[in-house]
Length: 139
Image (cartoon, rainbow, N blue to C red; front, side, top):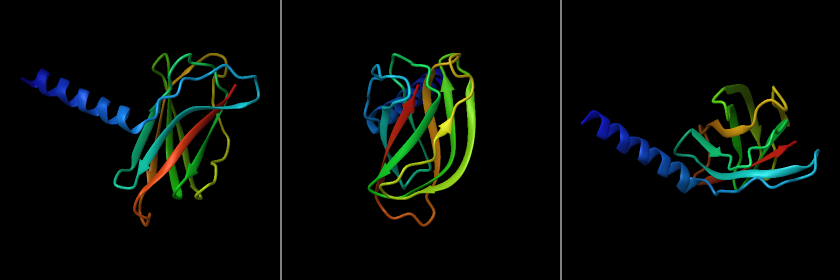
């Protein structure tokens, strides 16, 4: 019975992620150029969101977020690599509507490939609605 409940909860969680994320496949791009690796909507009724990076899982050296439709206060990011190792990136800054985050350099360039990016945001005092978040990466 416990296994069945755990499996159902896992399937529900995965389906919620798949619904929120617009799937994009990383395309080949020249070194030093930004490319979109994922897009999602940050709902102000929650405080956490994430994207799954679809293959090929390129070795990116930097990421940044672009926010539209509403401002967003980014609190923390966790980048998970294909080997399962997480990279906790503490941040605390406001991204205005139509603005971008700072460039976030990743550790272990050339050694690890991004599999997933989760981010936490502060919703206190936020307007109703959603912020569209696009994640860019650079080789």
